[in-house]
Image 1: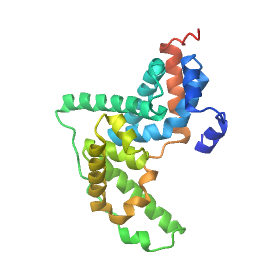
Image 2: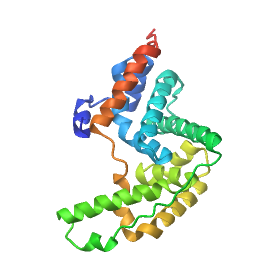
Image 3: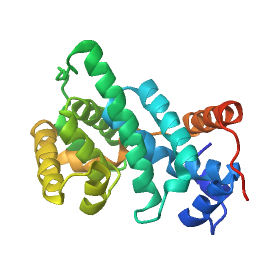
Image 4: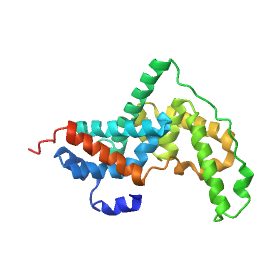
Length: 235
């Protein structure tokens, strides 16, 4: 379902604290609302870490199940999205560690592709050719981002793609704010070496996630909850 349709289906006053209260009380409608509200951003985060669509969806589902089971531990000292992001990151990093043990190394392959940046300026911003060129550049940026070392890629995803603050990013990764700033600067510099000034045009369009993908993740998680996780007691 389109993002706009999802938004219309959500109660206007269903802020994060109300959602948390509902989840603690065992309200699975509140849980579904939480997933649909944060699906796109959390998927993009997982996809940016794992560099694989199917792995990212699996990691997101596991993180949601973990959130359902541990929602009582949410204290509200950070935003709900920050708390969920940490669960997603923990799941993703665990997968990377297991893959590293299997292969002894996580390959970082530099894609041997090229995009003609002059094409970006050959037409007016609203022309079909311009839209195609930007789509190509976005795909190129995604591939370049996949090739960044993990420590830089995750900071770039949180800061540039998800637009988290330095403080929120530091909380998610449990690193100093100065480290967040230096890694983010380095990540952008590395990307700009390949994409120059046009990188800023497409940062926030990375790893689109919506429609059928959104519904599939929600349906699979709710199905697993029905099979594996007993409902909370509201008393």
